[in-house]
Image (cartoon, rainbow over all chains, first blue to last red; front, top):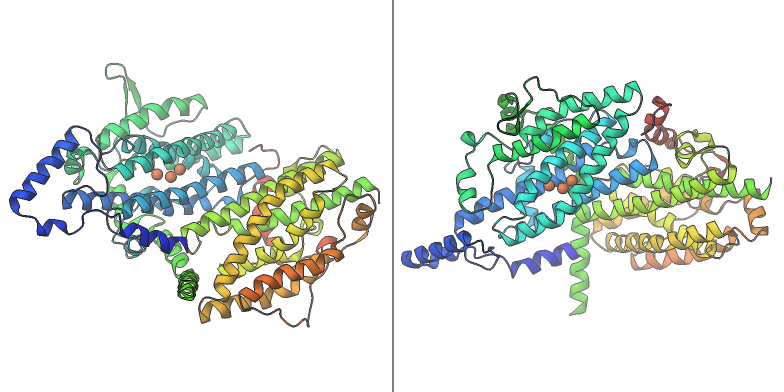
Length: 336
Length: 254
Ligand SMILES: [Fe+2]
Ligand SMILES: [Fe+2]
Ligand SMILES: [Fe+2]
């Protein structure tokens, strides 16, 4: 089985886990200084390079969270594959959701270089210890939601990931570079769905606007809490894992999305949204951070459902994974 | 029946088989036992949607009634669908059943396209030449899993045996033919399925012997009639789901 092989292969190239304990204080300080200098001069960090334990932990948290988001994100969209309204749309959506599985795989593999294997990360997701993007805790109620997700959610992901492609950890940066190309296609197909709806019947236009109304604010929340309230931002910015603040990225997303909405006649559900001539950015209304807090802490409309769907897939597939492992063990034994 | 009408019917059969099996496989998106299998099952579903589109589009062109590939997929009722009953069977999220269903069908599909590649009808031979590359992968991928599951753990052996026993009664029907086949065989366009039955059995047995599975005893009910639009109760639900949007919004373009 190639997944077993891959886990074994990764053992040889994982980072310097546990090495710090054997280092003297002077040596540790020296290495940290070297590490900081590397980061400062823009040299990427690779799995075999020395790195501070906190850097490794924060990255692992962030990357596994990202991988989980790709995988959980398959569910709300997967919900409409069997109901896609044409064979062409069905093929595009199926391919899109399949890409997300691929993104999950790349990012899990990249995260494995930090010393935790995929199955352990998945256990953390299922036990609730690891988080995933809160946007996927909203339901997809109509076909227009598939358009809204592709356009807004993947659009927000592009803004995030384009920056992450320049982050200090090599495997993560390279995974992002590869993924961004596909995200652009996801974003376009979503926008195209919305554009078709907006030039369609009255019912279709209402469907599109309704999806916009429901997904706009949760999309803005995808960038995370406001800078004044973001507990992990400081370290991540210092290490160039994060290159821009949450608020900067949110603004960037709004600035690029509002004209797209206007071009097809969709209203932004925000009375305070207005282009500010002096800042050259859109001003916007207050985000409902209480809702964000609730959804992140497990009380969104679909948190329970998403976790149940992932847990069921995992449990229902256990016998398959066991069989594959048993079979490859038999084959390996018979070769010796 | 004219040669043209026979060919339309024949294309619909291939397309219906592909689109219904694609539907079943796409139900797995996001629910596979490992991410790699999510990707593989989506791949197979995508290939099948591609095949369905090709053959629906050709049927639509031949009939020349202003219907599109989507009209054929989304605006015909269950009694008009002419897929084999095997492909519409549910798997209840049992991976082995899903794999067994695809394996049994893909083996036939492979043999059929291999012959159709030499069809006198250029469109049919062209579509078949493209499809066969995809179907070879399906046979191989599903065959590999059947061997792993059959020769994996005691539990997996039992489960895949159960799946085989449940699905076997739909396999005889894969070789049913009618007037349509006779006309197309005469035109050098179609295949004689009775000639493929032994090859199919050999192919299936080869994998089963590696998987330590045995062909179930034939006995009891054998399904029949898919090509006449006689289906199991499952198809109606598939279509209710699949056709919902075009039916609910008949004037909409998506
Ligand atoms: Fe993605
Ligand atoms: Fe992403
Ligand atoms: Fe995406």
